[in-house]
Image 1 (cartoon, one colour):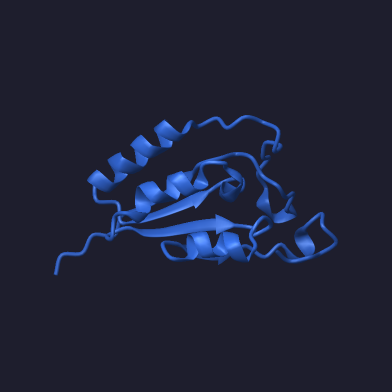
Image 2: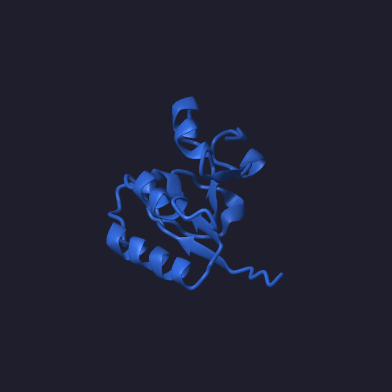
Length: 123
């Protein structure tokens, strides 16, 4: 069987709601407008899927803070060949939010532990 492994790490925002010491990236504050509009992200994802990318990972900043994150996920989740991942700090997630994503998404929790500015709490 000829199996292709094609991975796309896609930084869909530079905004973040945390300030992790280990990150090493200067993120934009939440008040900053998004730099990538939805249509650019959508077209990039469609192009990637047409080129047989079968693993797509959304990164940031914090990708879950985008107002259109559900729309972005829906572009990819309709393709059964694509394994979707979201790297997140889980700060905004609650039970309802998780239910929205869990069907089509593998969520990796990013532990902040002692490297945070939030009194060492994990999210």
